[in-house]
Each structure stands twice: as structure tokens, then as C-alpha cells.
Image 1 (cartoon, rainbow, N blue to C red):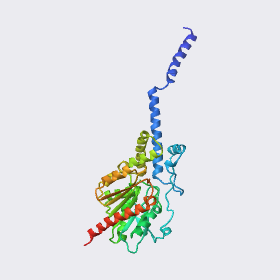
Image 2 (image 1 turned 60 degrees about the vertical axis):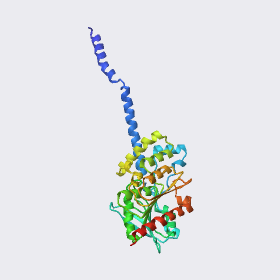
Image 3 (image 1 turned 120 degrees about the horizontal axis):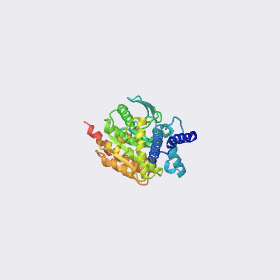
Image 4 (image 1 turned 180 degrees about the vertical axis):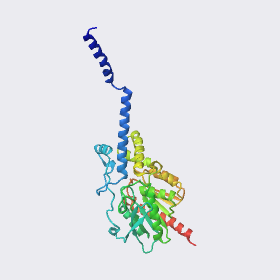
Length: 354
């Protein structure tokens, strides 16, 4: 064979492996790689959202607007970028409501420091301990404290961890806040001087109270719960619905958010369900819910009510959403709460009397 032909044969042979090496990957491999990248991206986005939801930014500023009030373009931006939530601060003090008060620091076993406002009454019928909701601080409950004080009760308003004058910057939507309820209750027992202690909670505060009573041995004389959600998964799904996310993407997205939120704050969000705590609560309880509440729906409030093991009372506020029921229906709120305390607290006192 001529040398030229041999060279052509060798070059041809060498070229074949190079051609095979440049062949495209099988379609299934490309699809699998795309799916893997998609899953990683979704989990990264979920972690970002969960972390932002449960870690307040260390800067002050206004609360972000409610999702249902945003335009579609802003909702889409929120889904992609997440939201920065400034650390909740107290916007006023009891002095603005002509209420006497003193600041108190409540120690906790986990080294968390809780700030409270003690509002004394000259002739107290009891002590009401008030716990605020998510993205709020104790000053948000000053209107309720003023009414309780007018009804004859001393009040103790408490900042949860991460809010107001308390330490930290994390929130767990009522899970670890149950430790704060337990610490505040222990402090309240020393202040109440044997008088009845009533626990009042709004939304996250209500969930924390139920957990503290069910799992941590907290035994108040009565409980007032406003706008309580039934399950952690449900309340996260509700937030996706407020953004206009369809049910199918919302369900797995909510689970990812709960998982990564638990990872970032070291707790199991799937087991944080007030409806389960309620089954172990025998304390007389008043539940308040709103027909237009899209964060803690009327159905969720009724589920918690049905699960309660002790004396229970339910009042639904027509046309009221996830806002202060006192602010929305002041006369009705005062009448219902006063009637509940007049019956249940008097019963508790008479049962303890010699």
C-alpha cells in the first residue's frame, strides 16, 4: 500500500473515536440533569424564603405590605426574590393610653431575655398575660390591655423572642415561643399574688399558648385565643394562596418551606399543630375567629374549637379578617370577653376558695 494511503487510513481511524466522543448525551440524561437542577433551584429558593420568614432583618422599617394587596407583578417579584422582614419594634408604650406601667425583664432557661410591660390595677380581679402575633410586638396589644384594665385586671404584655425589647432575631411561628409563654407564666405567678391568671394570644401567640399548656405544664385559669391556625402546613399554604399560587404548586412548596424553616431554626414544623395541642387543653377557653380571615380561616378556628378537651366557647366575627377583633368590633369584643371572664374566672376562684 502506498505511504499516502496508509496515512489516510491512520487519520481516518484516529478520527472515529473523536467523533464518538463528541456525540450528544442521551435524552434521558439531559432530562435527568435538568430535573436535578430544577429541584436544587426550588430548594434553594424555598430555603431563602423560609430563612427570611423566620429571621428578622436587624434594621428597623415598616412592615412589608400584605400579599393580597400587591399587584400581580409585585407578587411574582416576591415569589422570586423573597421578602425582607424588619425586626418588629414597639411603636408606643402604655403611657400613650394613660396606663401606669413598669418595664420588666423575664429570664428564660435558654438564655433568651424577654421584655414585658406590667400594668398594675389598684384592685385587680386577676392578671391577663398578652402575647402578640407574627411580625408584631407587644405594643400591638395595648388596646386590648386598656379594655382588660378597665374591666378590673392587671396586665402583663410580653415581647416574644426576636421582637420588641426581647433578645434574638428568630421566630418559629409559635413553636419555641411556647417556651416564652412558660417563662412569662412563671413570672406572672409571682406577680399575681394568688389571683387568677388569664392568657390571651393573637394568631402566633394563640398557637404558642396552646403548645405551652399542652406540653409544658402551664396551667392558667382561663385562655382567650384570637385567629389561631390549626396546622403549620395549612397556614403556610394560606400564604401561598394569598400570592395567587395554584393549589398544586402551593402544596409541595409549603412543605419545602416548612422543612427548610425547621432546618434553619432547628425545630420540626410538621409537628407544630395547634389542633393537636388543643386535644390536651382542659382549661376554659374562648376562641375568636373571623369569617373573612384568610390566614387563620374560620374552618381552622372551628377545628381547634372542636378539638379542645375542656370548657370551650366560640365567637365568630362576621366580615372580620386577620386583624384585631377589638379594633373591628369593639362593643362585641368587650361584651364577649367580659361575659366569658365573669363566668369562668369566677368559677375558678370559687373552686379554689376554702
